[in-house]
Structures are given as C-alpha cells and as structure tokens.
Image (cartoon, rainbow, N blue to C red; front, side, top):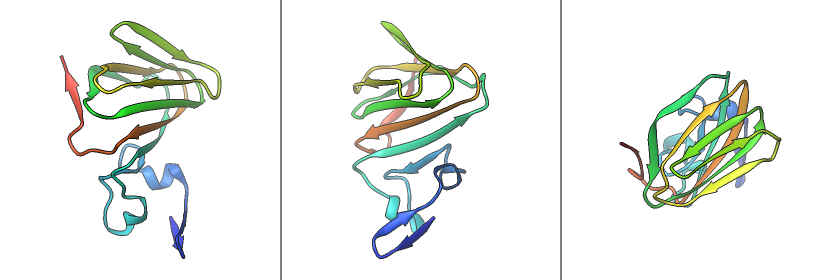
Length: 125
C-alpha cells in the first residue's frame, strides 16, 4: 500500500492478506488508517475452488453485495439459491438474511458490506 497526499493505492490481494481478504472496514488500524471506516467493508476474496461456508452466516444490520470477478460462486439463502457464473454477476442481500456460499472452482469475488459494524457478522443455526 502506498499513501501520499490523500491518495492510497495498492493491491487488493496483497493488502487483504492476513485478514481473509478484507481491505476496507472498521477493523483496520495503525498504518491501515486510510482504509479504516465505519461506512463500508470491502473484501477481495480469491478461492482455489471447493472452499465453502458450511454454517449459516448473517449480518444483523449490514447489507451485503457480492460481485463475481472470475469463476463460479454459489450462494444459498433460506428461500433461494443464486449462481454467479458470468463476470459481473452479483447478488445483494439485506440485513438479517442468512447465507451459505461455495466456490465451484478457481474464483474471485468482491464483497461490499455496509455499514461496517463491530460484532454484526455472526453464525446462526
């Protein structure tokens, strides 16, 4: 990450490493203060394939948007399943909606969540 005169640049994969891909949000501190915000969280997620979330996850107050960059990504909700298979496919879900996911093969997904709130993400069921 490079920062000069109010402009920050870097590489999402590098800057998100060690934080499961999260590169913007309330949880950043220290040298990452330029990317610390309570307004939004951004994740650059790179999956080799086969990775999945096996326990239902939910955000009580935050909206979530997942955008497919490359690959195939399956999301399951209580009433629906969504397959992101074309670059740019996305799914948006509201607070309180549980979800599971699976990377069907090598996949890159950008996740945007707002607002960025401590303790808002939890496992259910």
